[in-house]
Length: 166
Image (cartoon, rainbow, N blue to C red; front, side, top):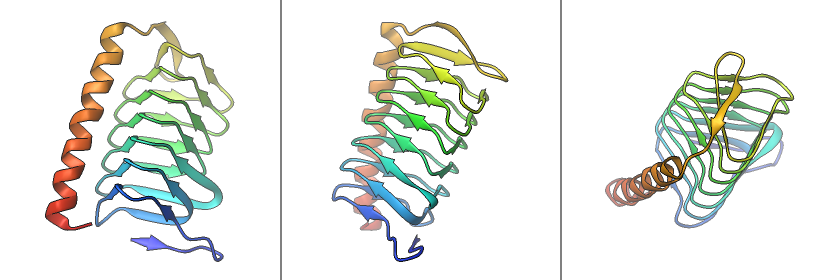
């Protein structure tokens, strides 16, 4: 569902998959190759949302007023509120990223973690816990796993786009 807010309408580039029951509200910009999966809500009525190329926001996520870098994966049920997420980042299942937090490029926030307001997660690190703390550096294996996951998701998005004619 696409909903305007105060004359601001989501701006969606070509080759984007938006599931039929996802909601895009207000100032939302989706770049080429982005996929927004079933049950996800992108709420751009307070501050705009920007999702860069080839990123995926999986099922039942909630994003409000946040920027998401390219080739980033936001896993099932994550919540992003007024934050910035870098390029090549994995946000784990059910993770919560709060106001003015900044997640550096090539990083991972583990499943179930809560990144407190104004927290900065440095580039190339993995953070976990409540509140989230850096626990280690990213490994080559982590980068390969993210790339493979995004590749699989892009292929599924193409299939669903054809099946659902979105």
